[in-house]
Length: 239
Image (cartoon, rainbow, N blue to C red; front, side, top):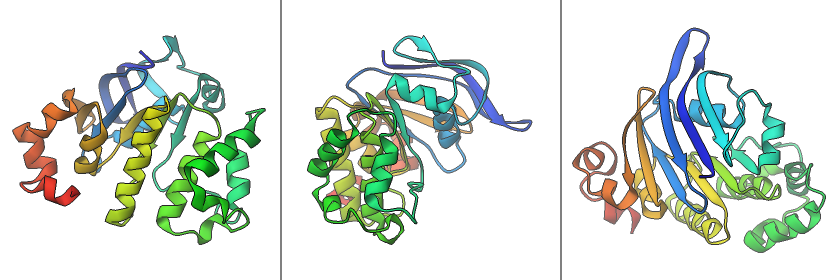
């Protein structure tokens, strides 16, 4: 079990956002967390990454508790977060953003070469400012920056946000290839159609709690999930 979250509670000020969530991600899986805006998905990811203090519960990576550890030490556990909105350094070049992703990696130049092989389009834009890239290119750069750290566990927050349908397909195909290369993915996503197509398992979150969980293929046929997230013609939307 690569990631285990037990009875996690956290929030902002006196407002509890995540209300006793438990879940797990096994090595080699793609696990998606679905839910509407305000369900607490991003807050949960921020807590796992060490960006939001937890009130109670436990977070374990490779069976070791990381509660209380700052975000930069969690990288040593081979965990990286690609945040919602990409959060690139827009006034820095593509090359500089990639370098920052591997600041602790002694072999980061080799890791950056691997990113070029995965995203060849980025190689031709090394000296271009990240802020001038298209939305899809920025998402590829955000993924590449995280991959320079050689993570075993990749936390992705809404990678399809703001992207055109064709670019959504490209991003999710990239996530599938990451799994083939041995990267475990925990994916927070509102686009349930795309997420369930590539996930092994899924959780559904509402108002800070997990209300459903199971194999992705089973949740696709769950009437409640279809009604709330997929709609009648979900296959046509993807195809």
